[in-house]
Length: 104
Image (cartoon, rainbow, N blue to C red):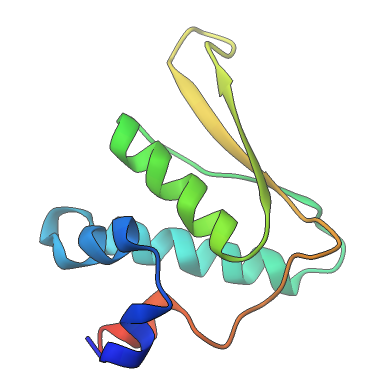
């Protein structure tokens, strides 16, 4: 990874990107957030299929990287665990520095 970008990135997410098991999931999360940020009519985003605590933590970190407010909803309908919701805030921003770039 490029050192300049790495210094500006969340260390948890850097480690997740290095881990081949989680890399694609984290990159997909970022892609979904970027699409969400570009849609001016959508104010809330729900991350899909986060079966582990680690992935839920990654979802929070990716969303917070873009200035989104996040929350976890535990034991939602059906009792299948929890989900992560991200909401746009006035200080939310679409960043030029993103995690996919750091892998080049």
